[in-house]
Amino acid sequence: QSVLTQPPSVSGAPGQRVTISCTGSSSNIGARYDVHWYQQVPGTAPKLLIYGNTDRPSGVPDRFSGSKSGTSASLAITGLQAEDEADYYCQSYDTGLSGYVFGTGTKVTVL
Amino acid sequence: QVQLQESGPGLVKPSETLSLTCTVSGGSVSSHYWSWIRQPPGKGLEWIGYMHHSVRTNYNPSLKSRVTISIDTSKNQVSLKLSSVTAADTAVYYCARDPSNSYPYYYGLDVWGHGTTVTVSS
Image (tube, rainbow over all chains, first blue to last red; front, side, top):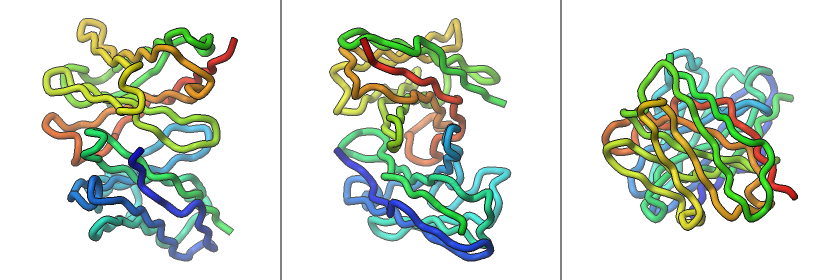
């Protein structure tokens, strides 16, 4: 089954910058489909954080930014805050599935 | 403001059919893509399928033989049926909206329900 690969965990001190990678393939990210990012606080539903590779929905702080290159994408969090501690998932479209593919998820810990 | 609310039995017996409903308020199910996504305990997100009332319906190939998604415009609801369930189908089930009316590539899933927990057990 198609899947996007993320590091299981990343951590940083308050105020630091962390990045989360999302590696796909030629059937999803490499096929030029957009990448979207979600934040999920444990026990709650995912929340859209970044859409269309780089755009933030209204209300999402500009500390969150996204980028994409080739078959990979990244989410950066600058000025890390305690409230950023959550699980983060990337998502794209996959031609093999003719549907959505999600990343494996990354747990962000604020030290 | 669009809101989604999932509902259905929290416990389903093995081999039976799981049936869930997503009630949409503040918007119409006649537009946009409506998805079901699930998350097994302690695991990641898995796309089950999506439906656009007038464009297309697609299911995850790994579940396709057991899944049906339908839309009831009169009740403004999206439904999920998953047949022949096993313990591996135990998960939190979410409905979510992709705001596109063309292709489901561009905007992500911008509205999610709170999710409903389904346990498969005898």
